[in-house]
Length: 212
Image 1 (cartoon, rainbow, N blue to C red):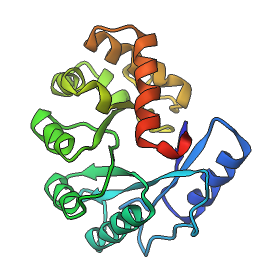
Image 2 (cartoon, one colour; image 1 turned 90 degrees about the vertical axis):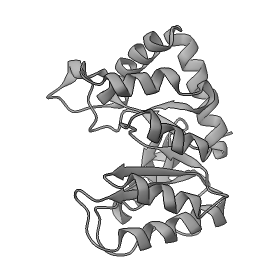
Image 3 (tube, one colour; image 1 turned 180 degrees about the horizontal axis):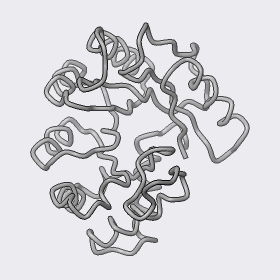
Image 4 (cartoon, rainbow, N blue to C red; image 1 turned 30 degrees about the horizontal axis):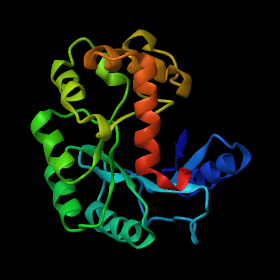
């Protein structure tokens, strides 16, 4: 699993977790709703496999988000690390910034948009990551994206302690509950959960290649 940092304190914590547990890797980032300048631990630790969580949030964030994300994208390209992108209400601006960095690779974290936006990010070479929100009965458009997403660009996540599946609403999410999302996505794609699991491992290793 990959533990995501969102500020200076959590960046340090996820690196500590990754050093303590062989099955845990770290991503260091600066959430768009955080103020101030990004504080990423440099040089990048060998257990860090991505820059994230980073992105734009025009529903809750403050000023300076675009400038911060631009700097973080430049860092990711320089370090040859993928990015995990948070996008809320800023699809056009996120796409414009990605286009400005042809060498950038990464994943659209907690993807919730429709097929037109999905295709835009897929055309950039990005992966799409689906979380528990896809289990909501009303999310027909999102389920269609999960069905149509190319097999080699599909990722799953929990976003724990958030992002609960429909049947676990009201309790704190945890990595073990990824099975809820996996069962639904496997059903949508007409494959077994085991086959989806193998696919997810291959895709994660392809994108977060420092885990190899």
